Length: 375
Image 1 (cartoon, helix red, strand yellow):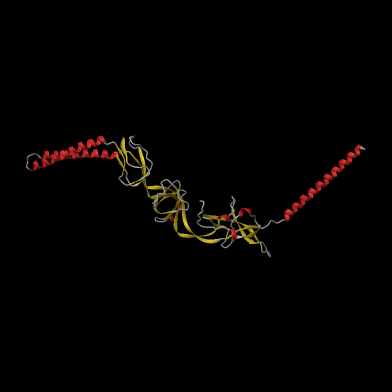
Image 2: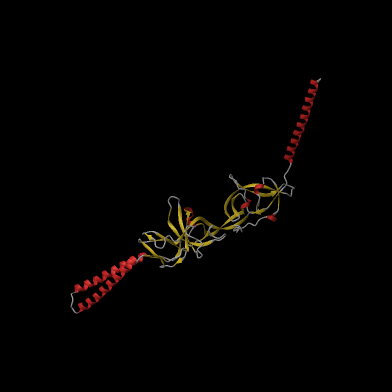
């Protein structure tokens, strides 16, 4: 009896488990069928109509700034510094005194040399008068003249030594950080201070040899840099083109001159350079946010009718080839035609053939030269 009861219990459990499993399989099968037949709700999108624009034709490059005149002022001879006549970071004019070395010995020697020059001059005048009356021989007059020239040369030599120890600005410009101290003995060639003429300033950049025919002297250039206030662009002019092409890189060096009255540009700064060519180029443009970027190919989503008899809209993925990007826009080299409507934002949420609803009330304003407030 006990055995029969156990068997009946096991059979009952098996039946219950089978019923539960069957119900679960039926539930899962029903859910799969519903998922296959279900259609997601339309996605709300913003749109933009591809249009032709004329963009400035530019040759872009990376440049480096260089002072029109720039040197590190150094000592010509060894000597002790007795005076420093400049403030670091100040402006100086041509000939302004920067550093005075000890010239006490040379000053004393100069007084002696000037006295010798004066004596030789008096002797020459006397000899000239006596030669006129035939009191002295002509050779005595020649000796007196030679002695005067020797004395003058000796005095000039001492003055040159004093000038070498009197260090002056070779040209006007902006001084840098002082590298010497009062009382210090500096040696020949030792750096004293950097001096840079900042207005105007040069920008040097390289372009490939195939772009050389596009650039001419006098063409305008525009500079931008993260070292300038946001949105500021500085203009200049192409002033020099190297006559030779670098044999290794096949690039040619070009130099432009830029006004720099406020000295915002400094030598050594990295800048973005754009040479403005005289002719504008026609391009087909869409917002850069309309492009779904991918390693294999970039694409956009075109707005099309959902089908015959339907008033709805759907999207079709279209592969495109991109050109230059400027501001909020990107040029389309191939894959689109003027007037075609593309989804302008949120393309990463879409798939080919998906239903959409157009709502451009929240569409952003696309600009060719945007100036973000937080940039």
